[in-house]
Picture: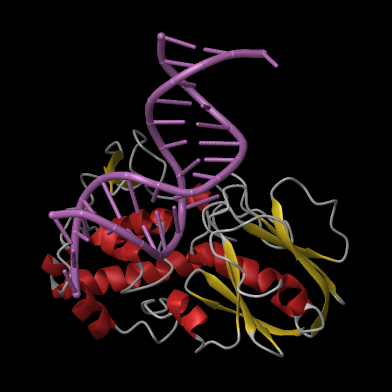
Length: 270
DNA sequence: CACGGATCCTGATGGC
DNA sequence: TGCCATCAGGATCCGT
């Protein structure tokens, strides 16, 4: 489910409320993608200082160590003083002095991992190869161009790989490529400099706009407050196969790239 | 090293 | 209480 905008919207929806909270108890009832990395009871007594984001990971800074939370394809967090009884797919929960944080994840591609510090090998294994953050000054145009230059694969797949730029998932890759007028199958290394510049700007614009709109709720995404997103209503190509392009009326096409659906306008994207 | 495919898991949907 | 195939917001691992 969640790409950078959904993860960021989730972060914003509970970071202020959980800051300073002391963990009273924690439980993990089913295996997620990766092991927690410590006994879940060891979280008790620690304090949540802040919540940061790196790519699609949420980093919960504790007074001792940190928790890395990934939402996978179907994960969502909720944080409230009063949550309903836990359901079938609620796999991780932390009761704190300021409310309960809960991870719901039907497909269990998500994860909660404890690391002693961010430089800990456990954390570095997950964070170490991540690319640039697209919504900060870290997203350097020249470095982006160099990153694409050495990749022969289709630009859509290079964006999804996350080692050049992070946070762009299946929805926003199609949307950014539409905005930049680039065919998703174009080899990354063959994009001209002006086209790379256009794509660099498009990624920032699309992701920032999606954060503003509360993310995309295709099926069941909500922030930790329970709010749905609305960006999907203004998608130009994603999930719009056969519908007229909002710019030129040409029917939107879809295709498979690496077993993922890609949507594009054959007229606007060359 | 970079690429493409298989893989983890559950649920919804649509064709037959 | 039908069954089967396909698809879904991610990212790693493995063979080439």
